[in-house]
Length: 66
Image 1: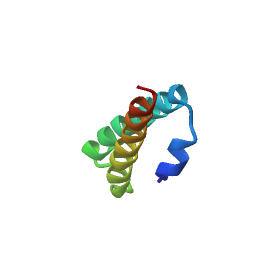
Image 2 (image 1 turned 90 degrees about the vertical axis):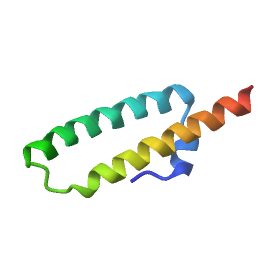
Image 3 (image 1 turned 135 degrees about the vertical axis):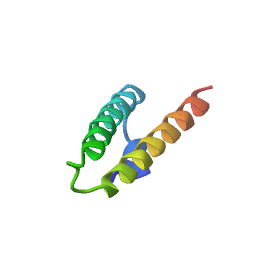
Image 4 (image 1 turned 90 degrees about the horizontal axis):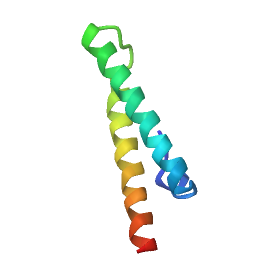
């Protein structure tokens, strides 16, 4: 699980890439959970929260530059 401070240190482009990566990982894990093959189901919650954290930081960066 990443912290908001780690996301704040990233550039906006890198942050967008990280969000895409996390969303892809969440999609994969959701498929595995649906098939009953996912061992750690709490990982879905952590991924969703990381995505929300990253999007929040990206929004903050957008507001600072405006």
